[in-house]
Length: 258
Image 1 (cartoon, helix red, strand yellow):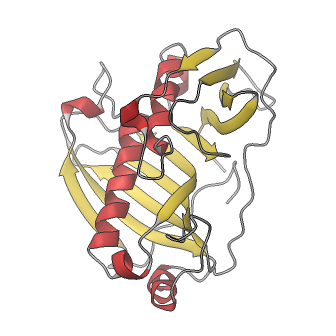
Image 2 (tube, helix red, strand yellow):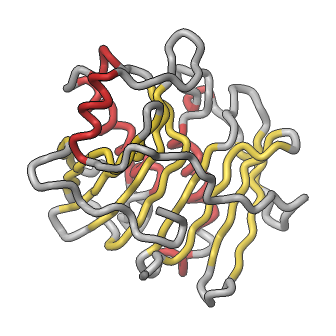
Image 3 (cartoon, rainbow, N blue to C red):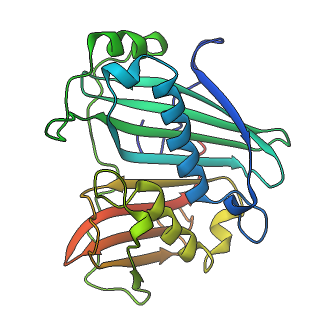
C-alpha cells in the first residue's frame, strides 16, 4: 500500500492469530475513546501472544517495528471488549507487514498494519527469518517481495510555534534501551487535544521510526497543522527531534476513501 491507499484485505477465513480482552479504564481518554497509545500497546500485546503461543519464540524471537498505520474507521469506546486478528499481509526474508484488525462488541472497527523487522539477538541488526518462520508467515500472503519505502519524507521544520518537550521517563525504555514505540503515541494524544476535528470522522494515523531514542536523551516534538491541504482535508504532522536529528515522524489525516 501507499499512504493514500486502503490496507490489505482480510485473510482467508479461519487463518490468522486471534485474541481478545476487555478495555481497561486506563486505555481511554476523558470521552471514553480508546487512545492511540493504548492501540499501540494492544498491537504489541497480540504480537507477544502470537510469538509465545507458536514456535516463533524459539525460531525468530526478536522483532522491532519500523512503521505503524492505524485506521480508525469506527472508534472503540469504553466499556467494551476488543477482539484482535493478526496475520501477515506481505513479507520478505527479513521483514513483514503484519495486519491487525481490532473490532469491539459495540461495533468499533480499527484496521492496522505494522512493518516488523526480524532482529538478530547477537548484533541487533536485521536478520533472515528462519525457514520455519517464513513458511508460517506465507500461509496468509502471496506477496513475498516486500521492500521498505518511507511514507513520511517531509523534513522537519527548523522550529514550530508549538514545540513540545517530550521528557523520556525510565518507564518508557524497553529491553533494547530504546523508547518503546507505544510511548510516542502519548505525545500524539497531547497534540490531538488541540485538534479534535481530526478525530471527528474516520482517520488514519501513521508513525515511522527513523532512529531510536535512548534513555536520558532530550526530545522535542515539532508540529505543523494544515486546516486544509491540497485535498482540502486537515492534516497534523509531527517530528520527534533529538539534537537536530529527526528520530520519528507522524501524520494524522482523514482516512483515504479510494
